[in-house]
Image 1: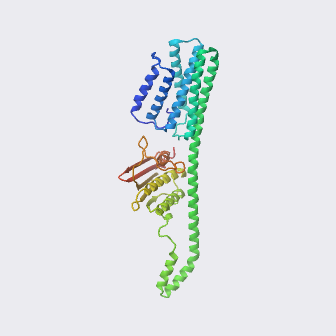
Image 2: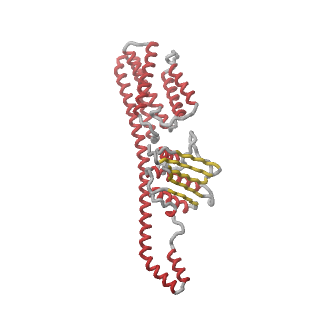
Image 3: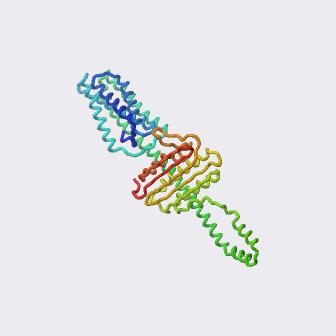
Length: 410
């Protein structure tokens, strides 16, 4: 389980679940008779329950893990049983030896898996892929059960049963590999979305800078003529005409530009904050930002995109549910003593959703295209030994993020 899951839970009920599981493993050795089918489903149910209580993981991953482990265990038990029958064991001796040997083999596999498996937070694969993966252990259990029944009546099929068991074990091993590849593909898809967002932000920032530079070049080009005209008006004491001329020069210039909100020099942060500020003003949301960051930060651009993008997206989305006049977003960001601190505050309406471990989750419908909510922010912060604190009460939602640049990325 430590090889397959990465976030242990501190639920005290896990001790009771493990105790029941251990007792169930000892029952056959004590001579208590339980049908193989009932034993299989009991094992699968207990493994699913233990993984649900002991680790924070998605339901699809827990179901896949439970089915694969129990399928491997059943294949090992049946293959071991057939081999022991082949060498002449039977009765209580066969049952005891088969149980102990299969337990030892499973323990050995657990050690190997724990040593070689990837120990990291893994994403769940899409539902249709999960169903396809689950079909393999389910089919293996069905096939091996019937092969065992055939072998019990016709001993001449014993070599075939042993080979079939080993081949099915190999197939299940391949499913573990395929599952890892599917998870890698899901994670790669997420990273590609982040890279696309980052490139879009950089492109928008470049376009904004290009337009700003073009405007400044035009103003510098016309400045001499404007100043000459104003000088003539002032020398002729025509202050009213000079005032109208100045107003004409300022005409069309917005009183508050979105790109005036953040001018740190960091293309990712500036483009994100300024873009979200523009969206907020169009929607009638008061946007206040205090951004004190250097142009260069020791964080990957993708991680900055995840953190600022998701926090501001969630804040703006929550404000859209609030009546006009009470909509606001405040952003504070600073980088001092190699510590990045970000805080976002916004009002909200209704109840914020939490998962089963008490963490807030995103409410956006298009999750594949708009990040992964606070869980994605937490993963980005954890990459720099940081943390995320979210609190919603009295209609105000506050999120604080701390990331440490000096220690480097994990």
